[in-house]
Image (cartoon, rainbow, N blue to C red; front, top):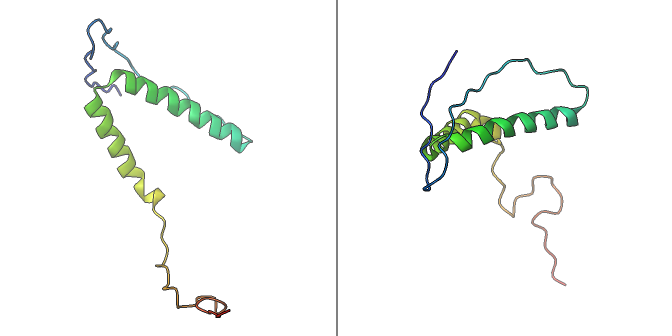
Length: 102
């Protein structure tokens, strides 16, 4: 699959035009025995892709791409929990709401 999109125009006089680029996904992810190696691999791959996109895409498209990516993954960031009980309710049955005048 080849995706064609628009590239950015130079912002400052004399700034070079972004080059035409292609991103190819050519190999499968290797197997890792160590979580730190996996994390490092993911960080490096993400940095390479993000840098190319940032340096070559118009800012408005880059910003909207970021928003779309965050929207797609937002459910992974949601934390479901019950509301915090009022201070006078004691969930555990001990100590909460107890006061002593000294």
